[in-house]
Image 1 (cartoon, protein in one colour):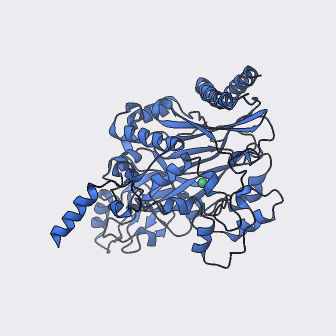
Image 2 (spheres, rainbow, N blue to C red; image 1 turned 90 degrees about the vertical axis):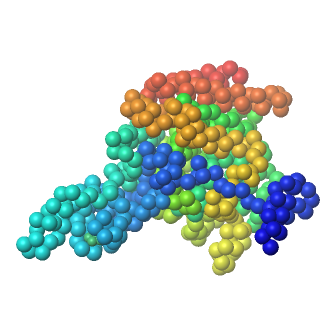
Image 3 (cartoon, rainbow, N blue to C red; image 1 turned 30 degrees about the vertical axis):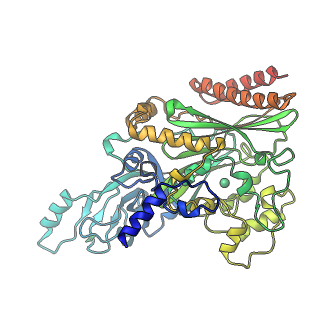
Length: 511
Ligand code: FES
Ligand SMILES: [Fe+2]
């Protein structure tokens, strides 16, 4: 029997797979890539990630009872004591291991439910209850025992924690100084869980080609993609983009351009960005392409935070307001941005929401990816997900941890692979500029670093031939990136003006 098994393995290993009906020869599934996917405390990526600030939950999750959370395979408890201080402590009380999720939140700190030891937010022991006459033992213990703790603070509805060595704590990166430069906008927090390895979800944000097949309800019977999807006449964000990818900030991140022709006079150049180790920045999602637009800024920033190796959460902010969204689409749906909900796309989170579907169905200006659908609401959720899958279904179904060795990438996957390379180089030390120490220095010297993320509708005429048009949209996109890089020595309004002036010159250069 065992001999037979060895023979089968050898046979599978040596056979060509690219043959008709060759499934038999592809039944041995290679292992996932642990260097980029595993984030437990004793892993290289886990060690790297712990040197950065991460959002670990939403402020609204901190109530009168403690909140159990898992981050990078560590069991933690988050709470806000009655003095307003936020604590993120190891869940298991270091007296005898009861979970602090059952503790009592106090004026100062949290009291373990089991024997009443009380811990401050920094892990200091505030009290060890003792019998009368034995107080000395309690006081001695309290002086020397610490509950493992992480520094944490709240910012615009999110709780951030630093889980690395205290002596190496970097400044919290105030990207673009305040994360939003558009007048009238505000940061609206959200947290959406995904039951897949964190990298699949991070990959998803660099994968711009999936928007059309995945987000057009393409598999709903009777509502297949129209022939205009991906072509002229579709909403601008649903035209297949011409993509280019650029390492930025000395390999600490990546920006990518998505160029799309709107009409013979206008081109849409969207720039998104990913920052090591787990940030993604998105410019305005629902561009209608109707008006010239220069250097529109962030619409969303998110951290893909590993829960463990087979689950993660996307936590971040949406920028909501008239600055980024003059048509007011987000303002109307703002109540849907939050804990386990998002205002765009069913299937963005695991819970599907009839409320969102009704809203889109009733809109006069229907978005193409939400065409009226058959009344399938009464059917079970799985069937619904099969009819209209979203990012959740796509990422979860890539296996709990995707197997990179089985992938067959195309040019449009370039961002996924570039970001993985940047991350790999940062972890292995092949890019010293992205080491935790270099990051810390860079942030200390460059507080509130600028972002590349932006949306532009440029008045650039269509090329006379397809070849000329392709070269034109790529060249314009490269100039958008080089101009933005050039602007990085400037800040705020001065930078915005510099970029806008340069883009006006760029437009003229094609006239
Ligand atoms: S286990 Fe927490 S006080 Fe004893
Ligand atoms: Fe998506």
